[in-house]
Amino acid sequence: MDFYSPYTSVQVFAEHGRGPPVPPPSTLIGALAAPLYHPEERWELGADLLDLVKYVTFWVPPYAVVENISRHFSIFSQRKQRAKVIGAAMKLVGGGRVADVYDDLKNYANVRQSVEELERFGRYDAARMAVQVLLQPATRLETYFAEPGYVLYVVEDKLAEVAKRVFRIGPKESLVAATPIEVRVEPLESEVVKTRFYAPEEAGSQWSKCVNVYMLERPSKNPLADLKRYCVPEPLNDMEVEVGKGWRAVRIVGEGVELKAVLPSYAAP
Image (cartoon, rainbow, N blue to C red; front, side):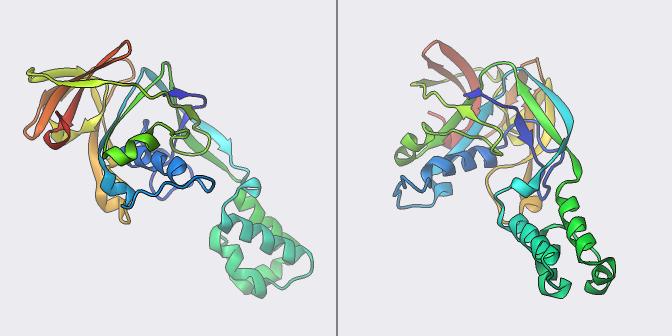
């Protein structure tokens, strides 16, 4: 998985912010949705996407994390809510009444003033206020990977072809080139494994040289309640994990690559 732009981290319920420094499992599952539901070529799987993914993890290459101050020019965004705000502002400038467009103004632009207050400002200032909210400075966390990464999908056979077509991980800025690799997976008898594949904290009884972050295991309707504690390798050091109950250590070999991972027993060979 070659990254052509930094991985942009956005926390739950935030337009910008400090989220996990690596693509969480929910994002990796979401990456399958782009090729799966592309409007020009739909795949008929006959089952929900989530039901076909048994386990997914990301091999984290050496990385650096920076927090950039960015200005999100949302006026050019494709989001429907933002388009409503821009449309409402244009109606105001064209002579429209605040009361007629107020719902669209506050829908996304976080306009806190009442209709009466905005009318006292005048329609030009009200329109400018709404647009300025969409253009305000904000920070975002960006991760730069020094080498290609690997996504390990354990999926039902009917989803295997879709996984080969991933072209984006996370926001549209995080463009990638995915190269499928034929591998064989072998069980390891070792109880202590060095790896750069992240895993939920429950996968090991002891961990070292890792960073703890909260991530979503899969897309959720209640993300704050479903956040799970994960162990992610440090920027340069491999993690060491003592394999926990219900998990298996494995070796993944293929095309010049040999990696080690910890998988849930139901997903391991």
